[in-house]
Image (cartoon, rainbow, N blue to C red; front, side, top):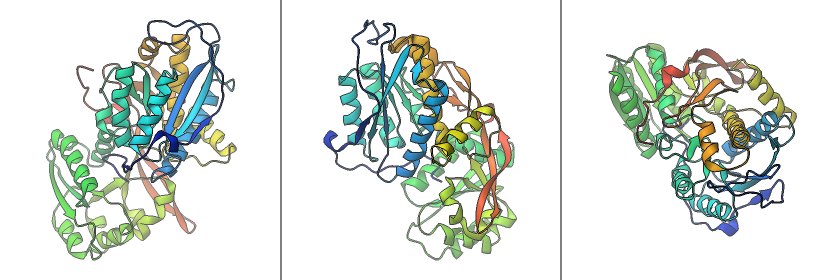
Length: 405
C-alpha cells in the first residue's frame, strides 16, 4: 500500500473531457446570505463530487463513490434531503488528472456550487484546497492522504485519514518507539523516499532511530537486499513497495528469515491486493486504515449492507465516501442551507459515529481523529482474507495540531 500518499499522475486535460453526470437537476434562487449560500425554506443544495471514475486510481474511486451513495442514503434516512433541503449531487471524473479536477471545480464554483467533495489523489487535493479558500466554498477531501491537507485553510476538511496516522499505526507494533531501531525497506523512488521521510518525521520524532534501505525499482534479484535487512538488527522493518515485483520482494524477505526474525509491517491495501504477498502473506503485520470486518458497530453494518445490496463490494475507501456524505448532510442541516460560514462552523469540532467508530473533526486544524487497526491475512480457500488483530484508538495516532489555520 502506498503509505506516504495516494499517488496520481498529471496529464494534459481540459474541462470538455471531464465526465459529468447529474443525479438531480433544478435550482431555486432563494435568499442569498453573506456566505453566498441559500437558506430559503426548501431550497435545493448543489453538491459536486470529484473522483476518479477512470484513470490509475479508478478502483479507489469506485470504493469512494459507492460509500458516498450509501452514506447519503443513511444520513438523509433515504429522503435525499438534509433538513428541508434536497441535495442535488453532480459527479465528475477527474481521471487522476489535476487539470481536469481543477477545471471541473472552477466550473462548479461558477455555477453556484458551495460544496465540493473528493478526490482520491493527493496531487489533486492539494490543488483543490486553495480554490476552496479563494472562493469560500466547503471542500471535503476524500481518500487523498497528504498531511498537507490538514490545517491548510478554514474551508478545507477531509473525510479519511492522513499519512501521519498510517505511519503512527505502524509504530504501534513496537509499542513506545523511543529507543527502537526502525528500518525502512523501500523502492528508491519518489514513493519510497517519501515513505522513508514520513517514518523519520513521525517515529523519529518519537525517539526511534530510523534508517533506510532503498532498492532500485528495476531490481529482480532481492537476495542481497534482503540479507542486508536481515543483518540490520531492526526492531521494526517498515516495507513500502508497489508494482509487479512485489511477490518476489516478499519471497526474498521470507527466505532470508527477515519475516521470522523481527517485526515486519506494511500497509494493508484493498482486497484485490491480498494475493500479491504470496505465501509470505500470513507472516506480515499489517497496519490498516479499514477493512469491512475491522469495526463492529451499527454504522459500519449499515454501510456494508447498503453497498452489498447495491451490488458493490465494501473495501478500503468505502468509509471515506460514507463519511463525506455524513459531513455534507450535517453541515447543510446545521446551516439550514449552503451558507458556507455556518457549514464550516458546524463541522469544526464535530464528533459523530462513523463506520470506523467514534470520529472527531478536530476544531483547530480539521484533522480527522479516528480509530486505526492492526491486521493480519489468513488463508481463505485459495486466497486470503483480513482479520483484526487490534483496534488502535484515535489518540494513539493523532497528528500534532497545526496552528494558524
